[in-house]
Image (cartoon, rainbow, N blue to C red; front, side):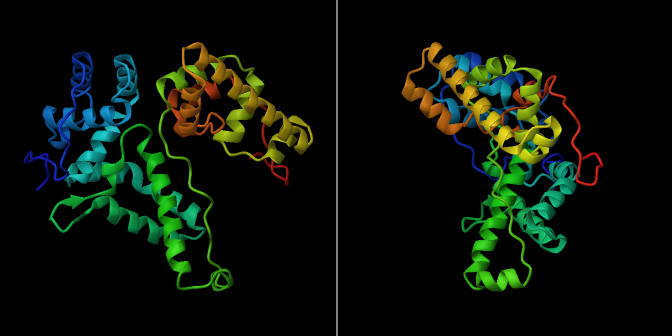
Length: 315
């Protein structure tokens, strides 16, 4: 029976909420009505527990303002959906499959390089996501590791890519690389960066720096880092040599790095603190996982010339 028809405590034990400032706890409670938690039989107390756990995990020692910014950026609805799925809620699983089944199979196909293997790794991941009882009889699901700091779809792609890599490594222990190549086995590209938003201070510095870019610079960054266009495609679009485009992107990312560091130092951070922030979130890795608002800002007025394939057709 689903949680929705008979509310129950999720099988995954929730840590006791750490002591948060009253404004933060109130802000968490304020997000409950629109979180969709009630649909899955999750009570306000349970909601407070698992959201508090996320805030304390990533910002326990941060100022109250940083905790509030982190809370504001959390994808609460997707976090609730993941927690309800890991608890075995039927309605949550229906919503999850409706939203993510098609895109997950498509991602699996692209990673594996063929439909059969792609479907296999997608199905294996579904089993891990659904969860199985451990030796203590407690249900364990991979979805317990999703923390709502980035899109659930992006997190799923990352987990799927890692699962495929682990699968290939396991297979390689019994079958030589030469045999795999001869049999036509496909190998995936490295997994996408983990989808998490940056520290609020880094997000502010990035946002201000992106505001300073020209429309063409935003076009280059969005095309290369977000749309995964190649240097050759960019060079053709702007009628320059590929090596020229490479040098231009290097200068642009270096400029971004310096400006972001300068802003972080101006906000009072030490050089060591800047290094720690940039170790966790590389400003050169302008992936969609950085955060939805920064992605939108990067795409703002970043339209540029069309890209064309070798046959002359638009891509």
